[in-house]
Image 1 (cartoon, helix red, strand yellow):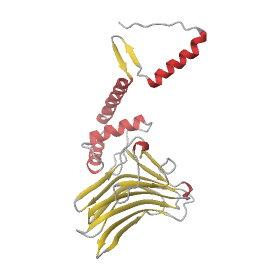
Image 2 (image 1 turned 60 degrees about the vertical axis):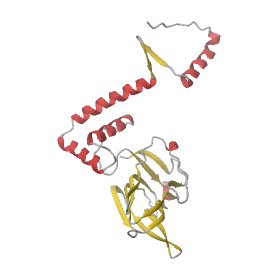
Image 3 (image 1 turned 30 degrees about the horizontal axis):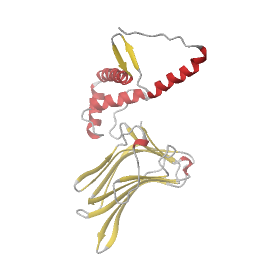
Length: 273
């Protein structure tokens, strides 16, 4: 049987008592006592998630066969999910928790969190760069993107530039591939670029996603890079907080570098619709 104590606090102690209670609420491990067992906050969160799973499963059952098939196709050709059902459940719960409309739309291009690159008023040179090393040609770069252009747009553009460095007769040479998006708004689209020489060893690869003096916002997801030996890098920016993803420039190593600094004004992880 749970026993509850109702203390009588003198008025002159009430302020101190409230400070103590607030301290334990912040730093302690409060429990919620019901009947003959204790219920922790984490337990309540797990039950809440289980309740959302039940709602998502019911939403899946309510879909027609064509829509279910579309989710299955998205699961096979999109990100790394085993079945369309699993992709739908993840998508439904995430959208519900973040106040987005449910259900979402099956997509081969994006699903879940992605990277938003913004250049407010087109006044800066904003870019995200990724470095990798020790690759064998040919190189294939694949990325899904969406672009929203503002007015006035400016004279710049959004580009994806890949530079692969190799040694030849004592010289450091490079193979370059540049993709420039068309002007105006671009809905979700997948870009695949293949370049380089078959069998050639590249000691360094640099890929830059840049918005130069261009007033627009770009959304990136499902970044997949591969060489002759197969896929060597995959990124869907699936993190809940950019602070847990530390981007640091390491020359000739595998890492990201952001210019300007990785702050919400220019870069953000968010659900891509």
